[in-house]
Image (tube, rainbow, N blue to C red; front, side, top):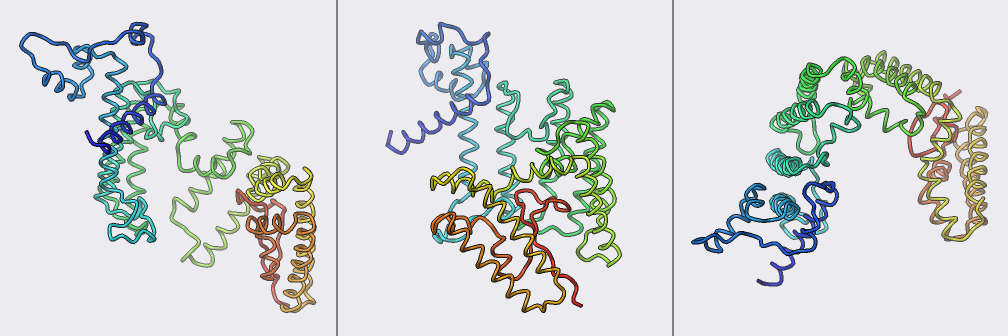
Length: 414
């Protein structure tokens, strides 16, 4: 066996063991002391049988046959798991080229949405087959069971029915999805909408009213939207249900009706803008302004980067908070400049630039040249001032996650 083959075999064995570690819980009925302390023959030698029959048994991938041949349960499962992983890995390596075939390694890598429909379907089927093997071997959950997120309270029989319904509709989507390159036509969106409605009807038919309510709260597009935007700020299930009702009403009015802001009439655009502001205000009322401000602060990527810079340069621990206080002061100054209608556009820009220069000098005195350079790559408020724009750090009226800097428009011309 050559070196490459040995490395491949070791890689497959290591990956299979790793997957097994994550997916399978120890089973007292199958793990015995004798398995860990004695050596068991891989296959039984019956009279008249050759070693090729034993190898054929190993190659079947059938758990019952392997165990009948004398292979310990844990070893048999790992053999099957390794075979399944090898098939998945071979498919992925065939379909997914990390570098272009023409040798242009500098070219952009292709992602799932860039591949042809046939490639996407083949890869999805290979991953689904691997998940099915995991499930047959006793894995309670796999990385492909994303639709069961937070829904483990369902009885096992209903969980399996739910999984099969969702898998069936995923296969249908694979066959009709022609949106290569991420481009979706209006007809594509309509097909997806109708298919989603059919799927939800089929799922509702197998669930009780209470189970359906929990399913929607856990897995619907509305729930995913709330989880992404406000999940860590919501303190209890009652508040979550209130916010869900607000977001669902908004989605029913606009998103599900296809009334998007782009390409819509001025009346629809104005109505959507008013609904956006009301939704934000209503959600903030449920969460609480102080709670939401703390949530924004804790998820602020700029603050995380700043605290890392302070720690790396061994600066005083209150440096990050002091800089944020000064940033708030600069935000108020920029708003005062912005609201001064006596200033011309050029005068405003000049004052914004002067404010940015003052802030840079102050920040460099606090962080040092290297710290200042690192910080400016992680924030945009200095850039906004240089561009001639005011900004706010008040989260009221803003629900963007991951930042606490909000650009402000210029006031109407006098």
